[in-house]
Image 1 (cartoon, rainbow, N blue to C red):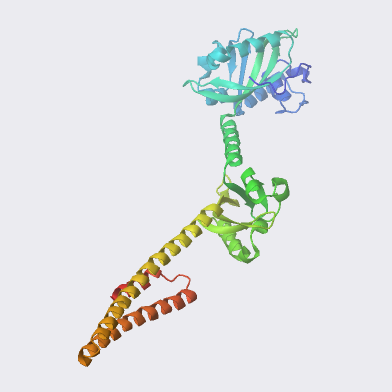
Image 2: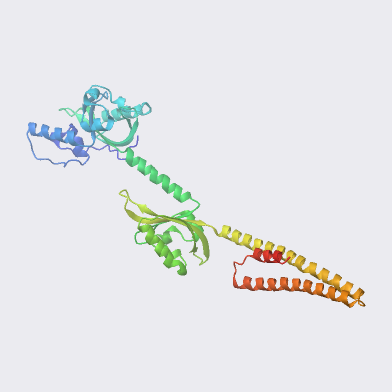
Length: 379
């Protein structure tokens, strides 16, 4: 049980209302401290109307924690009807582990406590726990003796759940390995997590309020501005590769996902960017491409050597045979004709290799495998 505003001093109550549920409403600021003088009948009608129409559960009890009154809002919040609760212990609404809270409240009332505010848990008729904000004020008799208390309770379960969700989300964002940046409709940065600081070098204090394109290279600002406009129109863009600029002016390659930020009504009120450092991955990819090119070039060189070496060996053998039968012109001519064909094969391989080199210089995407295919066709 939390007691954020416990007061031990006597609050200012309207004398005519002291000791009634209406005095508790006055103390909480739900009614003005000073009310026009009214007769008893009008006062009773006013009191009944207020207690019946409020959204807060108003319950009175005696010093034994027995319920003496129960308004419609109490039924709406806790599920019990008035006739089911009046005359029964208020402990029915309190989880067993918190029964000591009620004992402490009664002890304080008996000791002269004039009003306390708590946030605690209560049980509904179905047995489920809800979180409530509760104010307890004393009820007194004509002699000023404390005879019970008025409790005014408000269901804050949703608010507390939303608060916990916000805190959990904030913790997730702060602990994320990805840089997470949010901005408003004017592209001014509204949040900057620790990962963004590690990735880009700027602190949150430095970047909050700055334009989100402050970390975008100048040659990419136009494209990035277009993306931000799409997001602010409600479109989500998943994982595209881009570049961001660090505090030191260095370019860092990142994978970017952007999405709109919506308010409770579903209206876009900003955007978020998730940045993941892919510099090492891109460097590895470039190394792999280079290694593949080198491997391809090595295979090509081996194949080229094979295609040149075979006709050269044949040419040498033919020349040797022609030399051995120099006295036979017909046989020499046959050998020389075969040798010429082998030279043509060498010349073809040479031309194809030179053509491939020229194409590689003009086109960085040239596929060395194509040259290998051409060499195979020359066999």
